[in-house]
Image (cartoon, rainbow, N blue to C red):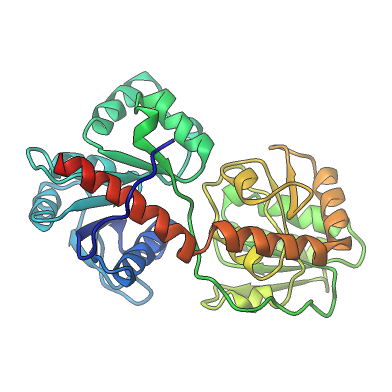
Length: 354
């Protein structure tokens, strides 16, 4: 998918549009991309469609109170004036940029943050989305299967779809092995993460501890389950700014999600020499090489499957972690991924000049 070519010219003016100024995965990735493009010599700016003030939010301008209000779209149209390209990061930026850029010659690159095959909502929704995609010059999908779904569902020609993964800053050095050497990390307590599955799978393994980071609607329920099933064998870190507080404590990352995009925590763990056990949802199979950097189980696996995979990986976590570190550093760090963005933007610039 996509095509190779020369990188975009230095000094090109790029506007990156986020859905909001909340520190969520897509917004954080878009903000980091702007910083990387500036470091590569481009004049990159980032704005959010909607937002509000407050601590912990991304330090970006926001254009209105609602992502798709007329006021927001008019403000976006003004901000796009004179740009070499606009990059929309996430689902609401697709209609926002498509509408705001009507009649303008500013190219629009859409960053798809998931696989539409997982959430496409029927014929009417697909028809409406197809119309929006006609306004898109290029699409950047996170992994190959997601790109193929965009082509199949929305009729976007394969040559207009590039595969560019998420990235994380490179880190120097691997984490030291934990003292327990039988410790499993888990991140997030929302229903789609299925944390109760993780608790039960770990509880079935003798001498294995669970370290939990993050928050979510299931926090109380999960901690109560930990007290029943993992008393004395779990630690809850809560919401942490420095994820190394988690990585220093664990030997394996466990994910039991029913749905995912391309989770950054898997990249972060791998960069620190920590293998992952996860179901085959979203981009997991693109991130984790089964049997080499961790285990990828079929979606909907049983508790016993997770337990067996965890026990297997814990026994060889150092070797799998070394392979995970090499894989992540070669594919999913900003020094590698920003070059892919520069080539994509260069192709858009070349098309515009024709």
